[in-house]
Image 1 (tube, rainbow over the protein chains, first blue to last red):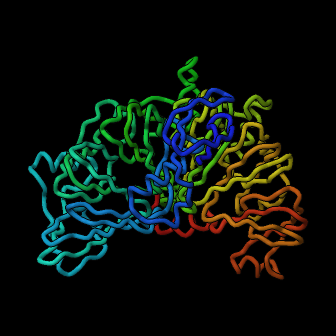
Image 2: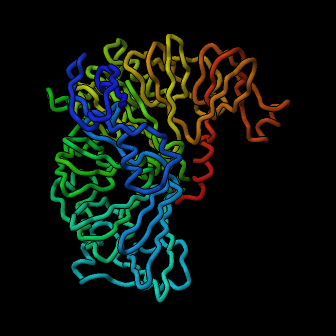
Length: 316
Length: 227
């Protein structure tokens, strides 16, 4: 039996397992509901660390109460994320505060990393620093807020492991690209495999107003991509539309369109007050279907908080 | 309103799910992400309340922003994700008619039914403690979301309890309190770095935070380049 509640009026329902995944309307208020799967809602903490199953569990947990909502935040726990592909095996542990990535490379396996993210590695891993791609690509990556230098870690004869962590406290996320494209905020790139191309992507006036810098980093191809941020990273599955404060965007899939606007409410009647005094600044309104990753803290907030504590320069 | 606290304790955000026509008042800048079915209004006072500009000015003095954002859900099941700006935890407190005294910078969001009064002066001379403490009094019935710097620790005061003034997040107004020195002598108290403490008595809930932002700032400041 499946037990769930209407997301709008909280009326409780119990239905048979055969109705899992079907659409229904609430008898009390008429709200459209998605009947959740029959698997009992289990606490996330005790179960296996496979990434796929985490996303599945999280979505099941969310589905009972929030099926009709526009988007579901996934992977909300501090769970270790693990998985393996043909290129490597990975384990992201100590999430979300002090996330670190362990990459297991098969013999001859390679991983490309942003400089200074390496923490430790097996002795048979060979590291080479250098430029990747031609001049244009290197410049593009630099415009995207990343270093020109790429460190390549190659496992020799036998396989080995490399551990990576970013400079600031925060989270790391993994995304597999299968001939797909996604965009990263300046500085969010951490690691990728060889099949992924990184280029700067001019965002036009949108990028200028979004405060994200004129260029986003575009990652495309087939392979494994790791990115990081200050604060935890929330994965939000956008179904229709979702609004994110521009300062909190970490990454988003190409399947999403976005435009930069102000909070809803300002438009009606042109209340300019919300914009200037509301403090939320500009927001990105994502539409379409795809994933957007959002960080829960901003470095800039911390910097502006610490600023008043700096000593004052002696002008005499 | 349903809520879920995620990524505790250092990177905590609160995800609120609002039903149609429900609304919540947030600290300016707290919004991280949200569904599209919200109407946002910025005011300098409590939504629908009176007091206007003067209350807004008082709120500014109390360490909170001058303006408040009111998010009103126009469709069912709308989500609002809010978080504080510094590392730390978020807590939920359900008010049912009583009052909670909240340290100025710890208030993050509350149901619009809750009255936020920044004119509360219960501590009076507490300003001498140098902790730049200001307080808001939240009363009414509804949900309250507070943030802290570091973790939040809840203490159920039964008779008496002593807290360093910089570590208080909030307390129920059923508690009596007086400001005093930590040690036997005033000089000893200050040399010990504890400054002034608050001595609570009575029965009620007290929330304290593990870290004190001014202490962290003063530790960092001298190591930074002059501005």
